[in-house]
Image 1 (cartoon, rainbow over the protein chains, first blue to last red):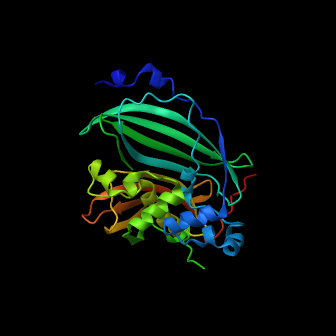
Image 2 (image 1 turned 120 degrees about the vertical axis):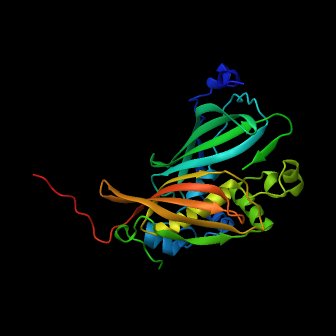
Length: 158
Length: 151
């Protein structure tokens, strides 16, 4: 199928639609658990005295932002395929995120395109998520590429 | 006190000390809980096998966290990770040796900031790169750059 046949006008109507902001307060124990789960003993994440001396307070590991999930849109994207792959992420980091910060998350669909490969037609969705702190400073962005393909039993790789 | 890398001392081709990972199911369950990613492909063999895998698979985001750690450790407390682009080209499995390594590919000064570009990879036991990554970090200078004043 061609790109035009797969990407419908309804799908295109989702481009640029922003989710309602969702807020999270960064908790010390959540950061500790995350650091332990990724086997990262960086003292800036877990040792308060050390972190205060070197950064002014405990900070989060870079990929911790993935915990700040955006709200869903009110409408459901008309997904044509049933298998999902996480294609990867591109992060930009502008400021450290501190324990105690309140992070507001907004997400929007930035791009839609089709590629054909060994698994047939694949729909690529590029979602841009922005993370802003309580001082209204943009602290990070993440572009996630999700790929869907095929029909039938639902599978997921990621 | 950790050793700090400085912009002046790091050149193109500099290798980051490799780290080998070999994790168990428990670590995946810990990551599922800590990241709130409860997809069963990461802890239920039956679900993973149904999807065509030989067993449970490692979260892509956990692999990216390992690669980010490698880069953040290289940057040190005074350095800063600025950009981090990771692609998932293949799945990886627990109880297998996975190697994380990388090297410096470019260095330049932008607006008086010392920017280092790196390529970092996660390679499986067969030597296949499953998770390539590009990153930019800012490293501190040994000597402070004083901007030239023009009158």
